[in-house]
Length: 52
Image (cartoon, rainbow, N blue to C red):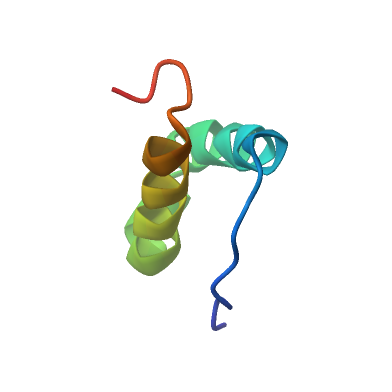
């Protein structure tokens, strides 16, 4: 499952952040390191509160 590069908005990052929280709890992060890194980069780039 390949991810297409996107230029997300802050609200998009917040939506992804919900998935990010869920991914930690479910262990999805360990099976999808590429998606995990992508979410982190998006949120850090947008300065999501609590991302640091």
